[in-house]
Length: 228
Image (cartoon, rainbow, N blue to C red; front, side, top):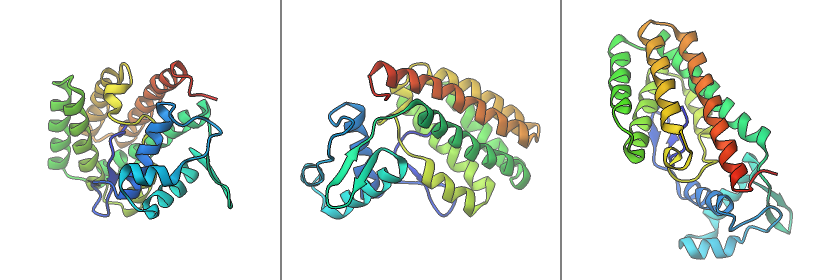
């Protein structure tokens, strides 16, 4: 499921608070999202460090990470320059999220316990009962944390750490129209498959849900004029 809040997977298989560099990266993504930084413009690293009251080190680390993600291009001796977002990359981002968490769901069925599935179902029940974006986001984090713990795989956790990043800054469920409705529908399918011991079915449900959420993100970015 889409996890656009600023959390990353930790070594224990859960989700932990971001580092300073990750927070700086989130700030720069928001600047791009809000068009305070536009395609082709140089990332003002010194200004960002001063604004956030951090050293240049986490800013440099953030730029390196954003370069890997495709948000910016670093040019030797010149700095980092903003890239435009493109639809294919946005859709691929959510496809990869779906595949990663889908694999976690399949492994959770294979390696987890009945009690673990019950815990996931209880969290999902709370998710279904709320339309408050902040509460929904916190519960989604709890759901993903439990799922990764049940998958019991350092490799899946490592991949989740790399790709669980923000295209839509802030609370994904508040920013993307219809995201809560799509997420609820997807969770119902995921939990149904988990309860049935159907790992492949849970995997497919994750991928389908993230594809549907990608449609909403693409529409949002297009409306804001952010797609190149």
